[in-house]
Image 1: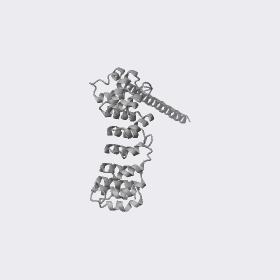
Image 2 (image 1 turned 90 degrees about the vertical axis):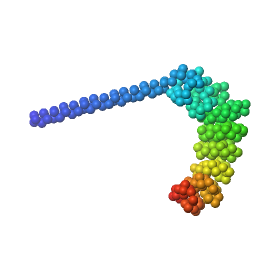
Image 3 (image 1 turned 90 degrees about the horizontal axis):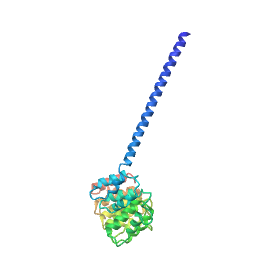
Image 4 (image 1 turned 60 degrees about the vertical axis):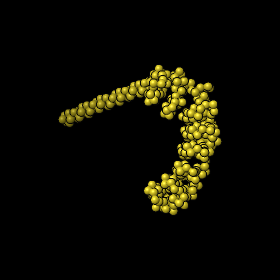
Length: 307
């Protein structure tokens, strides 16, 4: 009996030792995690404060490299500095596209000094349609409105897209609309799909597949007979992405070398038919398997699996 009691006592002591050891280890792990968390928090805080107000104020100096400008703005995301806003706002019209983009990104995060009457956003919005400004200034203003991601920019951008005489401005406007996820105040994006300038048509077609709602599919269908092979190709790609069944007849015609001499366009048309997956296109896709161009044949192999 005594031996049994002794054995039980020893077992109890061993269990208690294991429990204490486990508690110490767990406590050590918790402390380690908190220590790591504190280090991470300190690191994040140092990143947030890595750009001083003085560094932001001097960001527009001519001797500051673009990469340094981007670094200061990114690391100064949470720095509130009203006196820095005029300096950064000038970067909206910098010759480097990424500098303009990051400047708009920094400005749109400001609580004060940007969106009030007469402040940066309003002056930029007015400049977008001010014909007394150069086409470059108007184009950069339109770019900025897109990057600000504010719905109030849709109206002036739509005006620039359809009424500005400069293709440069209109192209910027088409891109700005997809940045704002809009087809325009009155569907201007569909009108731009048929713009007289090829670069604008291409940008507008690209935008149609990047916004959530686009109701001008008929305008895109018309572009598969465009004089520019680049536009025809992009139109076919857009119609495939939209799963536009109304475009099947036109895409079938575009997939044949008898009607379309550009192999890239034919390949895009065959790909689009595969995306739409209308049984009416099966014969055209089968015929494309014998196309003289390898890329078209590859597109046909993929499309044939979907129809």
